[in-house]
Every structure is written in C-alpha cells, then in structure tokens.
Amino acid sequence: MDPVINYCSHCGAGVSLQVPPGDSLARHVCARCGTIHYQNPKLVVGSLPVWQDKILLCRRAIEPRHGKWTLPAGFMENHETLPQAALRETIEEACAQVELGEMYTLISVPHISQVHVIYRARLLDLDFAPGIETLELGLFAEDEIPWPEIAFRTIALTLRHFFADRRAGNFGFHTGELPPPDLP
Image (cartoon, rainbow, N blue to C red; front, side, top):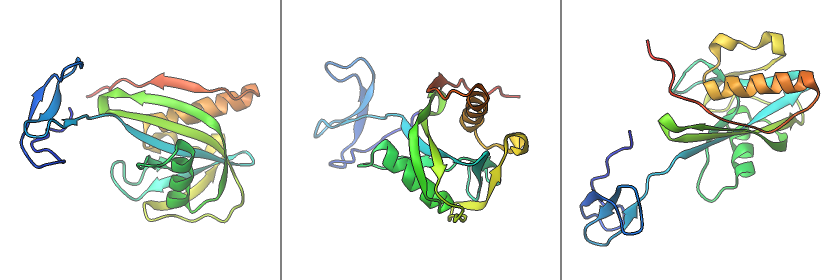
C-alpha cells in the first residue's frame, strides 16, 4: 500500500486522488498549485564484495531484520548514480574499499515498491570494519554462508546466482521479480 498524501509538499494545500490529464493512474494532485505527487519505487543498491573465495557479509544493527546477515546495500540517494550508491553503501556499512565490477542482479520487489541492484565487487584489502548500521562483518566461503540468517530474499537469490555462476565459470547478469512471501 502506498502511503496516503494529505498535503502538497510544494504549497501546503490539500491534495486529492485523481487521474491527471494524460495519465492512466490515480495520483495525489494539489487542488491549489496543481502539483502531481508521484509515488515511485525505491532503489536499493549495493555490492557483493569478494576476497579470494569468500564473500563479505554484514550483520544488520537496524530494522528491518536486525541481527540478520546481508550484503552492504541500502537506499539510493538523490543525485547519485547507481555505482556511486553501491560504493557509498559499502563504505557506510562495512568501511570497505572495493572495486566495482559489472551490475550483477536487478530484482524487482513490487509488493514493497522496491528494485534491488547489486554489483559484483572486489575487496581491495582486508581493512574493513562495521559501520553504524552493522553489528559485525564476516568473510564467508560458500559452505559457511549462514543461509537461515540471510536478511532478505533478494540477497539470498543474489548469493545463489553468484555461487552457481562461479561453479560454471561464467558470470552473467541476472534479473528477476520476487512475489510477496508466503504468509503463515
């Protein structure tokens, strides 16, 4: 569900839900200034840092999924490129210096209005430390990955693609879409 917008962020007047001319979807439109308030998916961007045969994972110090493991990633900021966001998030969460490779996974998560983008990356050194949003860091070989403790399905899918591609000796670009999780 998209959040309800009650007031215009441009002029403060009330807004109403309507289909603007030339559009096909209902939007929050300001009655006074006519500003259309679009609500679009958020981009989550990060990296898959590799050192030899191991992957750098971060244990989350924040919600959602506090205490679970993930790749360094987070919401893209305005005025950033995708690679800049991936590098910034890697520094913020792992204090790690990486060389970004190619974009590796692009996964749509429409039920939460997000798109997750992960780049393959090479750790430049072992000088890393937990950032403010990270409890601890670890380098994990494939057989050491704490699968039940992976925070997000997009990260688990990215890791599975990575290990399968590494075994095949060929890294491709992976896209996909995740449906809502099964609820008990």
